[in-house]
Structure formats: structure tokens, C-alpha cells
Image 1 (spheres, rainbow over the protein chains, first blue to last red):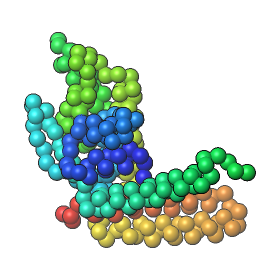
Image 2 (tube, chains in turn red, purple):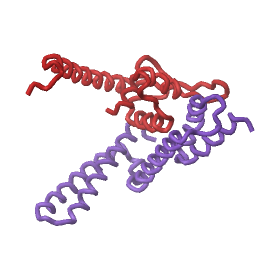
Image 3 (cartoon, helix red, strand yellow):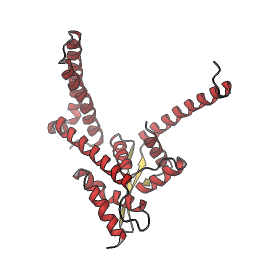
Image 4 (cartoon, helix red, strand yellow):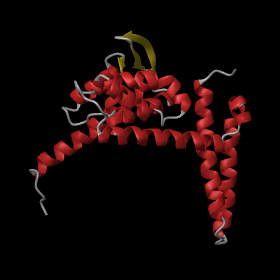
Length: 107
Length: 135
């Protein structure tokens, strides 16, 4: 799973959000490292929707502009949990190995 | 013309590169995202933004084109039944390619390409079958 995809799913994990909401949330989650652009976001959303990891929640008109809210499907939540688990276990191994070697090459 | 309407007009022009069906469904929504992201008084999309939109539009057009080329309308109509045939046929072509390879024939490539396209589009028809209830 690409990082952008992971972050989008994470943004939707707490509840449904619209396009711009996802962009600002992803920026916050990634501590300002990842700022999605509209084209990238919608290519990803389209793919996630085809794979049925997300779905349209509802639509709203704010200031005469359309906002479409997306939410995770149960499959999406499952996939995100699996991925998060995988990343945690990898990170855990990395950290513990760095600790035992003191962060420097021993050979 | 005010800055706001000018930047909107320019965004619209970029969105025009997307396939029609995609635009019908997402143009308004993408426009609100783009406008929300535009700075106060911004009159034109940034170069990065324009490149990103074009890249995504081209990607979607290519994908749509391939799909039209490789997925037959009757397969979409009978998707529940037919996606499996695509996969099976993919394996048949793969088998032929393996035999051809063992003889060192260069035309094995064609069978490999055929098998690959059957796998990809068989999976795609499967996805369509999952997403839409049969009509």
C-alpha cells in the first residue's frame, strides 16, 4: 500500500470527510510532510472506490459548492488495520535492532 | 473579471482533460476542492497543480481507453458469468507461452502479453461485477 493511500484511509478512519477535508487531515497526520494535490487525491479515491475500500457517504452544498463525503467500508477498515499492524511490527523490529547495536554497524 | 471567477475558469479548463464520464460525476466536487485550496487573490493554478491534474487526467483516459479496447460489451453485460472465463483463458495462454518458451520461440511473448491482459481485465470485470448488481 502506498503512503498516500494509507494516509487517505487513516483520514477516513475516524469518520466521513470530503475532498478538501481529507487533504488538510492528511497534511496534519503526516506532520506537514504530505500535501495531496487534487489530481492525485481523486485518482486515489477512484481506485479505492473501485476496490470497495471506501464509498460515498453523503453530499452537501456549502456556499453553492458541492461537497461529497467519503467513508471507509468494512473491507477498507480491515485493510487499514492489517496495514497498520504490518507497519508497526516492521517499525518495532527496526527500533529494537537499532537499540541492540547502538545504531552503528558492529562489523 | 474577479480573481475568483478567473481562477475557477482556469481550473475548469484543466478539468476538461478528464474523461467525460468522470467529469460528469466529479467535476463540481473537484472544483470545490481546488477553489478551497487556492490562496486568496490567486488568479491561476500553480504549475505543480496543473501538471498534477494533467497527469491524473491522462492516466484515467489511458485506463478507460485500454478498458474499451480489451473489455467486450457482452462481457460487462454477463459479468457474473464471464470474468472467470477470462482468468481461465489467461491460464491457457500462459500454458501455451510456457511450451513455446521451452522451444525457445520468440512468439511466446505474444501469448505472455495475451495472458497478462486476460488476467488484468478478467480481474477488472470481476470488480465491475462486485460493484454493480446485475441489471
